Length: 187
Ligand SMILES: [Mg+2]
Image (cartoon, rainbow, N blue to C red; front, side, top):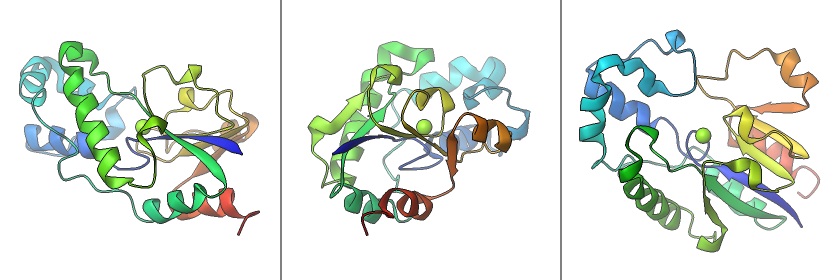
């Protein structure tokens, strides 16, 4: 059986951190101005204040799986070994990242009742995971896999499509598309 590494944030569930950030700011920031991957960089000198409040919040408390995610992932488990791999480190407050680890575990354990917890991987360095297929919204996390699937998110939607094509990276916009790619030879 082939193995698949599936990312959690912005692949299984979307926008939970940005929702908290927008509530804190009181407005929706213009994400187009963001240069990198981390939207907290938009906070400027409010960063410390934000994280002193954020450290006790559970951003998955009301989080839901993306549409079709549950059914497609469940069907995929018939043909693939699925590993959920997620980065839990809060770089600004690493001493509190254990809170995030617990919240992520609880979300995965409750929402994905068909995946055994031994298949949950918590690490910021996904390059050490040797899966055949990797699905993530961050390019660095899928490089090196036999099949590289980039899940569309605000920070990657403007990447040059021919550049992705040259790197053999396939863009997917939702779980239906993922299912069409990964289940087509099995259905
Ligand atoms: Mg992600």
